Structure formats: structure tokens, C-alpha cells
Length: 257
Image (tube, rainbow, N blue to C red):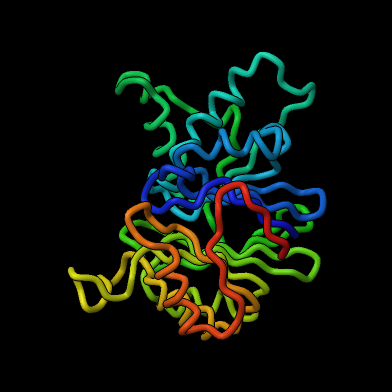
């Protein structure tokens, strides 16, 4: 299994990276986890979007899903589609069809008639889903909206993506024994503004390392670092809490799982 980072900037695009989006290549399957601002353009450097087998969303904040509307245009209006086009499965929080229709429609009147099911097969998250010979597991996590961590398993290998979350045992349990934890590290543990990170929103670098250690993962990849924080500082926090390999991901980089 291989992970390709389409974008990893936290809270929105940064000067060197789109927002959150990750391509997982597993055997003959190609699945995208999140499609934040700018990630559809990045995807096209690595894969023809027609070759996607599924999209899975951790949650529906714009920095994780804004480019879905661009994917709608691509699948509806590309002048040279493949001869055989099927609806693309989309695994997401239950409100996704309405939210994406609202984002795509140009005005309120058209919103009432917008139905994206011609191009997409929306499927609300369940605890376990099979996508061909890939298994997608989910767990609700601690964020201000309906949000999930995602675990992808294929051919004996496992990748867990935290999505956005505050500290939660649910992420530890989902990530237990995983080969790779792709985990948000959005802010330092201590700043001039706080002595402890605000609860229920994001993880600090230290908390990302603590979750990785508690879950016993093989490798920790840090992501979702906003442009205004120092990724090296967050990595140092994570390394102090987790004894395994730690790396901050970069846009367009690939990682073997």
C-alpha cells in the first residue's frame, strides 16, 4: 500500500501545499481520503481522476472537502469521459449529499433542484466497509462537527488517518497496531495563548505522539500543520512522546505503508 500526499496544510492551503487530501494506492484500487482546497489539481499530477475507485471524507470542513465541487464539474462536464462511467462511491458523514449540493449550486433556487447522484453514489460512514479487497474502518472522533478517523487495511497492511480531532480514546483504539498513523498535529502544546491546548478541536504535536504511543503504531506521519506554526517544533514534541519513527509529510511526497 502506498500513500501519496496531495495536500497537508492545516486549516486551509499554505504557500507550499494545498489543504488536506491523500491518495491511497492499494493493489488495483485508488481511494482518496479528503479533498481540501487545491487537492484536485494535485491529484491530477499523480492520477487521472477518472481512475478513482472511491472518495472517503473524514469530515466536511472546507479544508477537507472544498475541492469536491471541482470533482463534480470534472465528472459531469469533461468533454472526453471514458466509455464506461459508473457513479463514484463517496463515503462520508450522512449530511454530505445536502452539503455538497449546497456548495455546488449557484443560488438558492437551483439548490432545491440540485442532485449529484447522477455522478456519485453517496454512502454514509459505517463501522466497517469493503471497497473491493480494501477494508475501510471508521470511528467518530472529537471535533466541532460530525468527524471520523479512517483506517484503511489491505493485504495485511494498515494505515490510519486521524482526520481532525481533539484527544480521544477512539483514535487510539482505531489505530491500535497500525503500520502507519497519519495524524494531525495542528498546534504546539504550549503557546503564549494557552498552557494546555483547547479541548475538542485539534491535537498538538505532543498529543499526536501520545496517541501513536498508546496505539502502538509502527510509524507516525504528522500532517495538517497550518502555515503559521513551525512543523519542526511539532515534530520535536511528537518525538518526545513516541519512540518510533516520526516524520512531517510534505505535499506530493509518497510513503510506503
